[in-house]
Length: 138
Image (cartoon, rainbow, N blue to C red; front, top):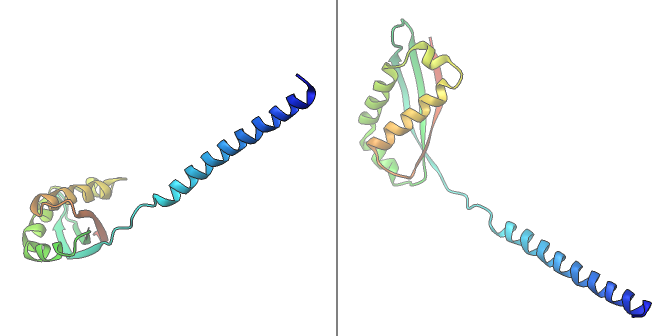
């Protein structure tokens, strides 16, 4: 083979490789742009202020919490079952000691426990989270 043919085949091979790699990169980046997660419209239901005695203590816990949901129709169910939900939350809070509430991660564990209780009372996958608007132990 002559030097011209070797150079020509090398250039053609380089161009083909560059086109394949460029096409692959373009395909991957354009696919990632199209797969943006769909934003879910959320609603909140305020449970209002709840007061509870702290177990084995003279302290009182005051929480003000909101429940995040993704179905507006659930707001009516929450209004109907508000007393039952608050009762469930009060039962959970009444079992908590100062240490349970004030340790690192205590509020997060309490949120998860309350969320689990709410999902028992109002069974739905549309209930997303519970947020403490206020959390005071005094």
